[in-house]
Image (cartoon, rainbow, N blue to C red; front, side, top):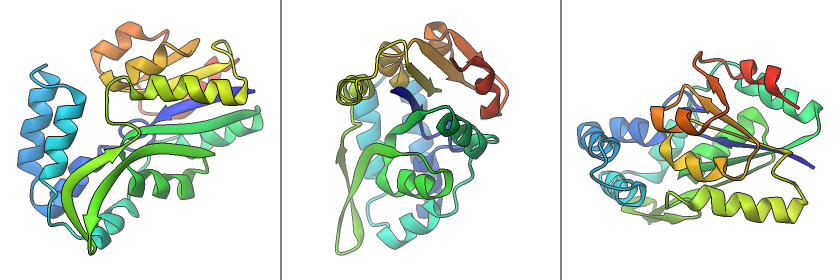
Length: 207
């Protein structure tokens, strides 16, 4: 069984869900400041995720869904996923983002399964809290190993595609490590680097 694992935000999707939600809720400036501090190494992924989600407190779940239903996907996303399916790959998405966005992405792009985090809400209003499968920098690698064991997929038959530091842990489990329009820290760990925003360019490297 061949396996392709994607990050979602800024890999399949053009942008970051948290930024779009914050813009819709009026907390974009706060989120940008937290993201900047995280990128400068002043806080880890878990801490920055919790702080950014706190800024969404009071946002309606309906508004979240409206934003996620109108996401823009990177060029070649649907075509590349279709190509992977034709070549016998199972396609899984791991996202440090949220259920609403990756579910919307699955409906548009047709990947087989996804794992993400959950925005907590009460009576249809976000509480500012978050939990789920993808809360830590090591989460993607840990879950990828479990899925490989379940499917009987080897390191050699796995391709991982991402753009940020929290994708490093899944690179450890994949022979083909694709840095897609990525941060420098991920490029250093990659053996395939795509700097043009077109996911179909990865097809040339498939086994």
